[in-house]
Structure formats: structure tokens, C-alpha cells
Length: 158
Length: 180
View 1 (cartoon, one colour):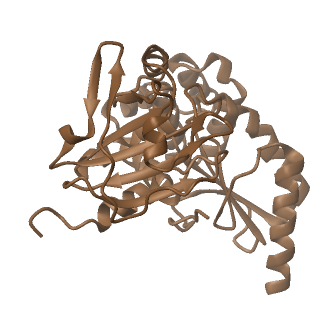
View 2 (cartoon, each protein chain N blue to C red):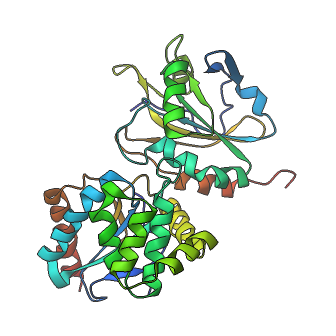
């Protein structure tokens, strides 16, 4: 398993396609919290896979001031089809070209497999990693760790 | 290792005795095909372990992918209010291929429950909060998909096939028996 960036590290910036004709940069989220969820591939076969779960928990994430971003090496068209099928209401980033570059910058790339790890990063309002976790590739980490981290974060101005 | 954070109480839907060595908690979605496939597995585990096993079912509807999971869960709560939870639970899973409002009303009728009363409960969202409470409790306990199982409070990350689950429950029962 790769060694992912730890809490306290500045989150590496990125600009990636979020649809076939739009890009999204991490800096656009300054002042807000981000849940960056790397995952190996779209179209996971199990009911309620990781992205479908985060989609369902979306109101809770937003209540805690956080926007989830899914990220994998799949292309933007693949993401679009996946998001439409699963009715996803948050962005999926395509870490597609150069393949896995952003995953590598977070220490979350599996070179042998050519996909991202199941790695979670909670990034604070200033763009610093507050919490990170790398799950065994076959285990969906759920949302409990993310929600716990968001609740532990100091509130703005506090 | 994810652990169950919401303890089993009398507010839960429970089959089996409080004295059972092992408590199996399932977080399930009535429209999830994997949950329907796991349903006979759980039944078989209950037959095999008998009084050693207590089974608890909690709702985990992923409504964005399974829009019928919410009314189904609420219908089961409606049945629970009339002490018929398990009949409704089994009826929905056994007939999942034709899940829809007509099926829920038919099942209610077959349990001598009022279909119009069910229709009204669904329209008012009478049991919505209870279902959502189950869901969020599951999320905070680390449920990562359905069916999501906990064996004596620890999330079970294996497959839901019979042999694997029997082994896991057997091992837990042995430990629990030693501890008593």
C-alpha cells in the first residue's frame, strides 16, 4: 500500500476535468472544506458502493461545510455515464492525463495496477490536510471516518 | 475496524433472545438485489444457530439508486407498528422482483393491515424519521454498502455467502461462550 500524505501537509493543488468540457481546481474551494475521495474505478459492482454512499450522505457532509470530490483515473466521459446511472450530485474528477498524476502527488497511486488507492483526504478551509486514511483496496471505507474528522475540525474563527 | 455505535435496544426489530451468544445486525435496503440474495442466507443461519443467534434488521435505503427502498422501509415500519414487521420484511424480500407500491399494499392486505392507512402513512412520511435515523446510525457505524452486517458489534467485511458467515458467527460464538 502506498504511503499517503499525512495530516498537516498542504494539499497539492490540481486542475482536472470534471466534465468533458469543464475543469475544477482545488484552489476554487479555498474557504470551504473538501473531502477528496480517491477510488480505483467507476462501476464498482457492489450495491451502495463508495460513491453511491457519499451521494446519500451528501446533506450531512454539506451540513458540516464540506464538499465531496470523487477522483479516479477514469476519463470524463466514463465519469459522466457513471454519475448519470448512479444519480450522483457531486463532482467526479478525471485524473486521466497524465494518468494518475494527482493520485501520485497525494501518495495514493498503485503503480502495478494503474489505479488510485481507496484514499480519503479531508482538507480544511486553508487547503491543509486535516485527516487522511488509506483503506485496503477491497474495503469500502464508508463515511464514518470522514464525518468524525469533520466534527473534530475547529469551526471557522474558533 | 468499524464498530456498531448504536446499541441494540427494544426499539429495534429483533428475532431471537437477548441471551443469545451472538447478535447479527443487518443494515439492509429492500430494493437492493444483494440484500434479497442475503435474505435466505440469514434465514439459514438462524435455523442453524437456533437460540445461539439473535438477528436485528435496520434500514439502510440508498434512495438515490433505489427509489423504492424508502417506501418499502416505511411500509415495514408501518407493519411494525402493528407487530407485523417480520412478515412484511420477508414478504418484500421474497417478492423483490415486483417491488412497488401495489406490492406493498397487497402485502399489507395479506397481513390484515389497512392498505389505505398504509397509503396515508407513506403520504405523510409518518415513519420517514425512524428510517433516516437507522440510516445515519449505520453511516456513523461504518456501514459501507448493503447488506451491511455486524457480528457482536464488529463490522463483517466478508462475503455474504452462507459458509463464510457461518464460520464468522461460529468463531464469535466460541469466543463469547468462553468469555461467559
